[in-house]
Image (cartoon, rainbow, N blue to C red; front, side, top):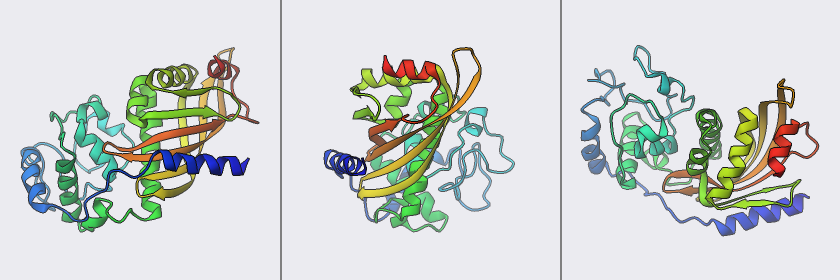
Length: 282
C-alpha cells in the first residue's frame, strides 16, 4: 500500500514539474510604481493614517480582517486566513472574485509581475527578506506547510460554505487535475467531471475541516500532503453526523498560486454517512 502511494507521488511530481520560477529579488521600482494605484486608499508606512482602507504596513503574514480599529466588511472578517504571499497574490488578481462581498472597489492586478513586485515591496517595508517574500529560495518547510494549510482553510472554509462547486474546482484545482478513490475504481478528470463530484459531496457535507498532517516539497513548484478531513453532514434521517476522510494531495504552484493537481482520497474503514457514500458512488 505505501509503495503504491509512493509511486503515485513520484508520478504526480513528474506530471506536474516546476515551471514558474520566482524572481530572486524585489523589483522595488516596479513595486513603488504599482503601489501608486493602492495609495489612493491605503498607507504602507508604519503609523501613517490610511485614507480609506486599512494600512498595509505589515500585511504580509497578518490575519485577514484583524487590524485593530478598522471597520472591515463582513466578507473580509469571514475570510479566516492569513495574508501569505500566495493568498495576497490570489486576492490582488481578482479581489471581488476571491472574497465576494468585499468593500474593496478595485479591479485587481492582472500582471503577475506587478503583483509580485508590490507584495515584495510590502514585505520589505515590514522588515521581511525580499527573497523570502517572493519565495526565491523555495521557502522553509514550515512556511510551505503554513501556505498550503491556508489554501486548505480557504477552500474548505469560505469556498465550501458558498456551495459553489465550480468555484471550488476553478480556485482550488489545476486545469488538468485528477481525483481518484482508494475504495472506488472511478477516476474523475476534466472540469465538468470534477464539478459533478465536488457538487455531489457538497450536497451532503455542509462543512469540512481539513488538517494537513504531513507536508513535503517534491520540487520547487511541487509538493504533497497527507490531509485528514472532518466532515459535518446529515444522515438519511436528517440527524447531524461527523465523520472523517483522508487524502493524498499532489500540489502544483501555478501563476495563480498553489493548486491541487492530484487527489487520492479514502473513506475506507471510516464511518461515512450513507447519503455521502451513495453520492460518491453515483
